[in-house]
Image (cartoon, rainbow, N blue to C red; front, side, top):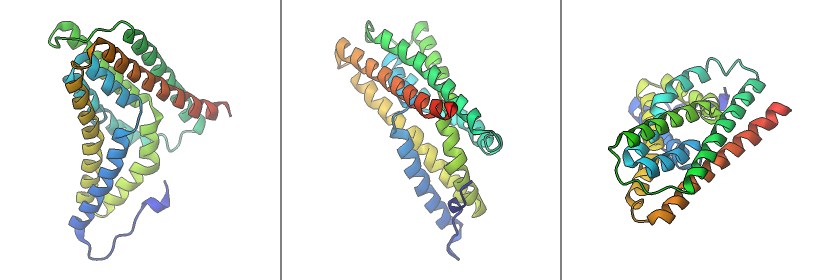
Length: 228
């Protein structure tokens, strides 16, 4: 882990001061990660378009369900794995996202704006999108690499300066990571019935393009490393 991530606190600062500092750091990192284009953001948008705000909010909350094993395993397993194994995982994640992108783009050609969200079909669609989001987040190497190279060292440093600091960092990070995606889902949900069928198809197609772009980035970044 990078040694410069372990910061030395000023004497007499106190646990409360440390907690505020860690909270601010978590907020900054969480907001940046929350609004960055990526597979989970694309699934939040497409899930909201297909199934309404409830689906989008559930997908936005996926990191709360999937990141605990990411945090634990990133500091215990990935630290001893060769780089090629990490690269292979990135390629698998890229291929998975490519399949989602193709499905979304195909659906965008003929999709109609859904009117009711309490039907069995809507519930099944929502559950499917939720599982896709969870799988995409677990297969993407980016959360793993973030926690291995940045998140875990910062969390350990915060814990050494007191549990309130570690709690503040996690609260700020996940509050903004999930909150920013939830806010985007709310905006899309409010606008989805005002844009008409053509606009709906364009937005759904745009989310498919985002998935495709995320897939391409993963395949280029980790495929190159795997081939080296």
